[in-house]
Image (tube, rainbow, N blue to C red):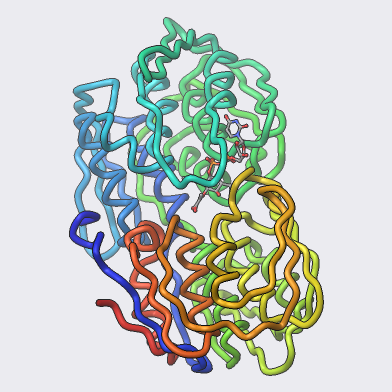
Length: 423
Ligand code: EPU
C-alpha cells in the first residue's frame, strides 16, 4: 500500500474559504498502542473505530511477522489474535518504517518474558532515544542489552516496582505499562506521560482484566499479574486530525463543524485558536470553528499533554504566518521539528529560527503557491494548510508521509470546499 502511494502528489489552488462538516477518525497513535497490546493475550481482540491509514497497515505487518493474526472484520474494526506467537522479534525492515512498532517490546516481554526489536523508524524530528523504555523494563527486573543494532529484554520473572521516568515519554510509558500488567506486584510509574493515547491504552488494558489506575496524571499505578483476556475496544477520536482541520478552517477562513471529537482532548488547540481570534465552540462531540476576521499573533509552546501538542506545532506555525504581529513558536518536545520552515520561507513567510527549536514569525505575509515535498506526516499536513492560504497553485509531493497518519485528507478537505486534487 505504502509503495503504491509513494509517487502521489496533492495539487491545491489556494484562496478558497472552507465550510461544511467533516468527521474525524480514530486516533492513529492510540490504535498503534492498542494493536501492540493485543499481543498480551491468546484471545481475539477487536478494535473498533480504527483509521484506514498506512501506519495501521504497517503495524499489522509488524504484528504478522510475530505470528499474530490481524484482519479487518467489518468497517473500521480490526480483529487481532496472538494465540500463536512464532517469534519474539519482529521483522527488521518493517520495524524501521514506524516508531510505534517498538511497542511490541513491552507486550512481548510481558507475555513471553523475552523480547527483541531492531531500532524503530519514524519521522526525523530529532533525537528519539529509547532509554526510558529500557529503564522501564529494567525497573521490572528485566535485563536489557543493546548489540548489533538490536534491543533485547529478558526476565525470568517480572516484578512490580517504582519506576521514575527521566522524561514523560509517551511510548516509553506505554511500553512499561504493557510489561507491568504481567509483573507480580505493584508498579508505579512516576513522571508518566499523561497523553490521551496513554489513557486509551490504560482503558484497554483494564478491559482486558488488568488493574491500571492514574492514567492521565503523571503517576500511574499498575497491579500486575492478573489474568488477561480478549475484548472489544473502541479507539478514541484522533485529536491531531481534529486539530489539523480546525487550524485549516482558521487559515482558509470560513465556518465548519468538526464532528466526532473528544472535547476534553482539544483544550490546548481551542485555547490557542481563540487567542488567535478564531471563534471555537464545542458542544457534545462537535467542534464549530468560525474564522472571519484578522488573526492575531501569539506565543506558542509545544509541550507534553495537556500542553499544546507537538504534532500540531507545524500546522499552527502556518496559521501564524497569516496572523498580525510577531509570534514565537517554541518546540519543547522534539529537538528538531522545524524542518518545514525553510519551505514556508520559500512561499514568502517571514520566519527567523533560533537554533532548531524556536522560531519567530512575523505576519501576515501573503504566501505564494510553490512546489513542496512532504518530509514527515505533520510537516506534510502543514504544507497542505499553507497551500490553502497561498495565492495560486501549490503541489505537495511525497504525500505518502501524510497518508501514514491522515485518512483521505484530500477528500475531507475537498468536502469542505478546498480546491485539492491527488495526482
Ligand atoms: N525521549 C527520551 N527518551 C526516551 C524516549 C523519548 O529522552 O526513551 C524524548 C525524545 O527525545 C523526545 C521526547 O522524549 O524529545 C518525546 O518523545 P516521546 O517518547 O514522548 O514520543 P514518542 O513516544 O516517540 C509519540 C507519538 C508522536 C508524538 C509524541 C509526543 C506515537 C507512535 N508517536 O512519540 O507522534 O509526537 O508521542 O506526543 O505514539 C506523530 O503522530 O506525528 C508523532 C510523531
